[in-house]
Length: 273
Image 1 (cartoon, one colour):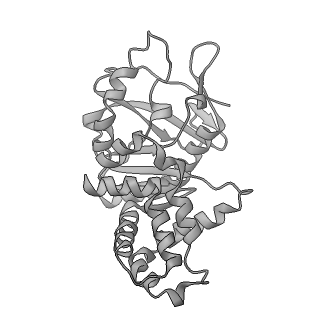
Image 2 (image 1 turned 30 degrees about the vertical axis):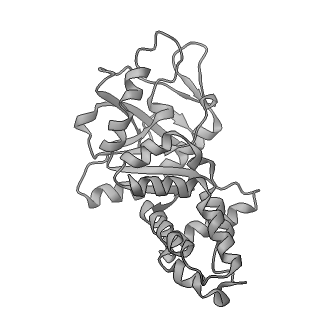
Image 3 (image 1 turned 45 degrees about the horizontal axis):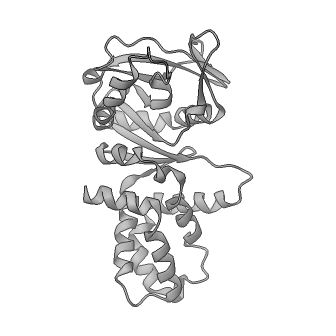
C-alpha cells in the first residue's frame, strides 16, 4: 500500500486540498511510477482552476498508519490516481483552451481527512463544502471504472464508450427504426450500452449532487474521456424510440431495459434539474 500524508488546512470552512502531479525528481507522496503532492488552497482563489473527481469508492481504501502520521491507500485508490495521471494531458489541454490555470484534482478519498476520530474537526465542514466544490470546479471527471483484462464483458463496454465518443448516438433513433439493417450487425454495441448504463457508479447517492452541480462533465474509463452531453444525446434518442411504434419487438425490449437502468434515471433527473 502507498502512504498518503495530509497537511492541516488553514480554514476548514473555506479551504480545500488539491492533488497535483510533480515532475520526476520531486517526491512527497509516491505511488508506482508517479509522484504527487497535495496542497491547500482557498476555494474562492482556485474557482474554475481545478478538476472535481466523482467516483465510486469504499472507506476501506484508506487506513490510518500505525504512527498516525498519514493514511495507507488501497490498490483501487492507487489505480484511480494512476488514471488521473494518464488523463492529465487532456485536462491541461482543456484548461489551456479556456485560458485558465490548472491547479490540480479534488478527490474526496485523498483530499479529505477520512479519520473517524471525534477530534477530527475538519471532516464535517469539508463535507458541507462539497456542493461549492463541484459547482466551482472548471471540470468534473466522472470516473466510471477501468478495464479488467480477464473480464470478457470489458470489450463490450469499451466498444460502447467508443460508440459514444465518436458521436454515433445522434443517429440511434433513425438506425433502430430501420431494424433490418441493424439486426445481426456488430456495429451497434447493444450489450455494451446496457453494461455502461448499469455500472455501479450510477447507483451512488452522492452522484446526484455531483453531476447536478457540475457544469462541464466528462466520463472517464481507463484514460478515455466522453463528454456527458453524449449521454444526454443517447437519453434523448431513447426517449424518441420509446414513443416509436415502428421499431421491432427485439429493439423495443432493449429500449425498455435501457430506460430501467440506474444511468438512465440519473441522466433524466439531471435533464429535468
